[in-house]
Structures are given as structure tokens and as C-alpha cells.
Amino acid sequence: MGNNAILYWSIIVALGLSGLSLLTMGLFSLRNVSYGKVRPVTVVLVVAPILLLAVLGFTMQTWAEAGIVTVVVMFITSLLGLLGSGLRSLFL
Image (tube, rainbow, N blue to C red; front, side, top):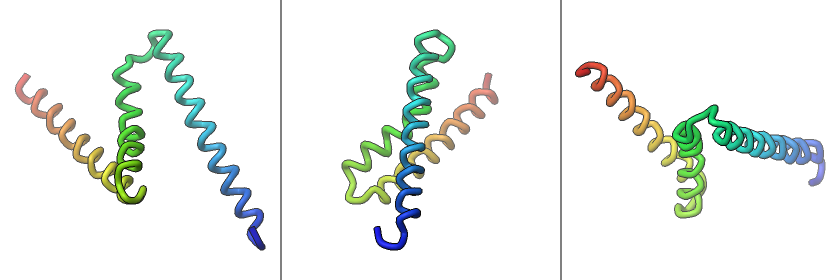
């Protein structure tokens, strides 16, 4: 740790709070799906980038490459979704 003990502990606390908030959001989304407030498709669409990053992270050489590929794939997916939505509204 050395001279940067406060920096070390602040990073640990920030990562812990981030993990706790992700866990809480996951639990509340499952609760809302079980109560029928949210459609399961919505939860799947929100979780898709996280799952893609996890799969790519464990299969690629570095997590940085996995993050870049995840961003590119999600960008292309969103562009295709916008294009499909625009074409559907144009022809219907």
C-alpha cells in the first residue's frame, strides 16, 4: 500500500458500492418481473451488454479488447434497431 493507503481504500469502497448497487438493481428487477410490472424482454435487453461483456471477457485475451468489442457490437445492434424501427414506421 505504501503512501497511498487512502487511495487504495477509496478504490475498494467505490468498487464495493458499485457491486452492491448492481446487485440491488438486479434483485429489484427480478421482483418487478415477478410482480408483472416489467416485461421480461425489457430485463433481457438491459442485461444483454453485461452478459456479452462477461462472455467476451473470458474468451478473449484481455478485458480491454472484450470491452471494445462489446461497445462496437452494441452500437451496431442499436443502429440496426433504429434502422428497423424507421423502416417499419415508413412502410406501415
